[in-house]
Image (cartoon, rainbow, N blue to C red; front, side, top):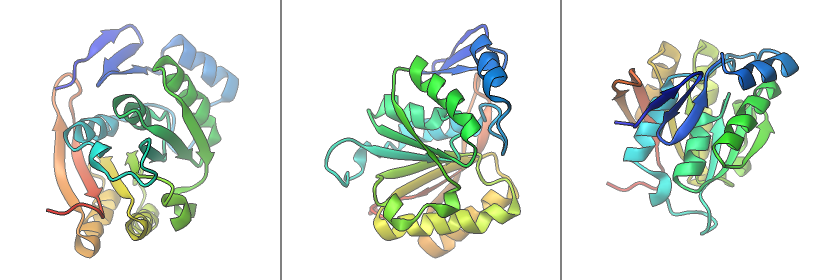
Length: 217
């Protein structure tokens, strides 16, 4: 279970400080940049599942492509908490991708208060090519498959990651588009797909799909 310390407008979970929408700095960023679109307006609870799952099945065991620092790509990053966790927990080099650049100030502020660096990349995840994925050891995401039209593009990204040997871990509360995508990853790629929960004080539950093309049982 994570150690969670609550302070006004802030909480510490899995070693990562996460601010709430009512925190003065978040309000300041919102006033300066406006509201993010595509649901990047807050921290989403499936990130708790992602962090807990990665603690249980860490990417440190990956054979790193460059033999050096673990390289993480968080797609649909929003505030980037999942990627920031990887940067802190695994000393990873983080790239955070989102279609909406308005989320990046929120991400960068969270990276700053957590003492890590993050590069940003404005793009839709369906535009990420094989040669792009080959630059990373693992792709992570939480709460990014919420419309039916996202199912096929996200599956195709996992398939492209497979072709270059990049692991993909995605969590979700269990929306039908995500479940359809995950089941396709299981049936066609042999991915792992299971329920996952993080009890009080996080009170988060849902599903995780993990596709590691380098894993051997």
